[in-house]
Length: 257
Image (cartoon, rainbow, N blue to C red; front, side, top):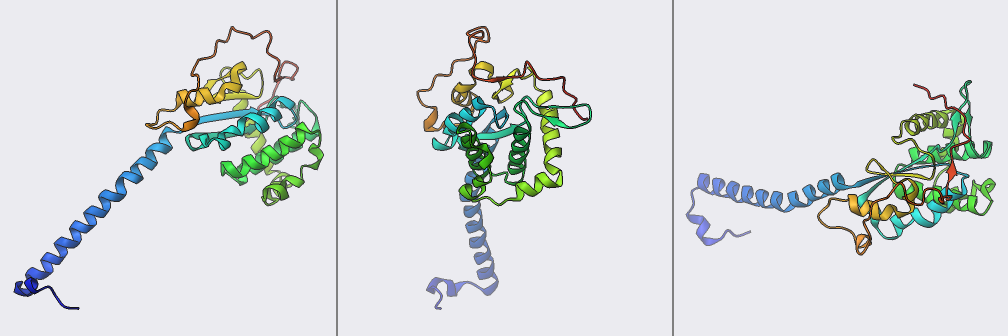
């Protein structure tokens, strides 16, 4: 490779220093190009809104919310600004001997634990939500005993079953029991939705509006455009609200510490 004519006039030491200087400039330029994208990615992560859903697997209102409403996070791309947490405990309680008792019977206890295991083993929101939604679709169709088919339909492995049989699932559920018992205000029914520590209570179906209001990022997603950001009035329509499974009949809970 021939050197440019003007470079022949440089002494070897000066030429070496010149090359190092050029390389340093190129390195600094590369850092300037990469740094903004990295910092903006970190900023987007910090700005994400945390939405927690407390639910139980065989409550028809929870199933309807997950299948027909919560799915909008993924359909509209809103999930890009949301840290979605799903806590399948609901109105269950722990009996004095440590056994889990569920509002809708043993099948619900089993499916709550299978879902808890799936959420833990497959932390990617898209992956475990697809599985949970499949199970809740079966609940709506009164076919929840066909739950095994959801592994094939979603492409997930059967590790959640091993998690259940090993007893790890029960430990996960006990952690969910403790978290649910510490909600402030306490949950009165499920589905119980909390957005950035604000309980939506009877207004849970308006979760998109609350997410958009809570998001502090520079550029809001298209899903947030033209959405009302009204706040919930806890004294309004409280007596007529029925779209939930209430905890009124649940027994006193014994929570492990």
